[in-house]
Amino acid sequence: METKINSGTAEMDWLLEGGYDKGIITTIYGPGSSGKTNLLLLCIANSVKGQKVIYIDTEGSFSLNRYKQICPDFKKALEKIIFLKPTSFKEQEKAIGHLSVLIKQDVGAIFVDSITMLYRAELKEEMNRGLNNSLAFQVRTLLEIARKKDIPVIMTTQVYADFENKDQVKLVGGNIIKNMSKCLIELKKSGPNRVAIIQKHRSIEEGKSIMFRIIDEGIKEVKKEETNKENKN
Image (tube, rainbow, N blue to C red; front, side):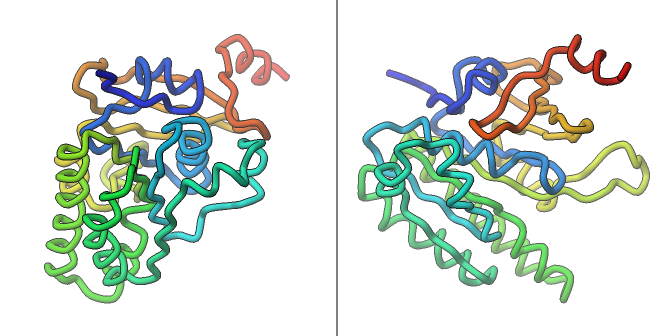
């Protein structure tokens, strides 16, 4: 029995030693424009053949033009995507609660982009323990589905600066996200390139990384010698 689905790219398959693990939550985090949504779209476009996927888009980040670039047969591919587009944190909670009905279909993966944007927006207005409880409930629900259905749940989350160490960032959602995710992938910007780093995994060493560049067709690995040439120029 297969324990992974491929990521949709050779680069991320190498990093993840075959792709995203089934039965767990994988969280991809990083600053804006670091490639989080691109990695989700590439997985949707090239993986989970013959099955539907659920895409919870809280940020309005799904770009049809981008999807056309990476998926030539995009019309057929779009038919397998079940879109949920909550615009408030309460709507997000309802959408995730409704997944128990949707997964009665032949669903091969669930994507959430992002799990914390609407949560963060409400936190700015009021520090409410109820929001943390709701976030924990939502992530637990996703984890339960991942385990029972043996499918991957792949989420993105935002980051904020660590005031004590400006070179580091913290995940929005903090320990709720960290503790329930068995795989954490950090994305960093490096000029025109991006770096994906394994920060937590059940079987892959922490710190394993790959540098890539986002291109029209998807992503492309950037070798160290290429970056050295760019720095010299």
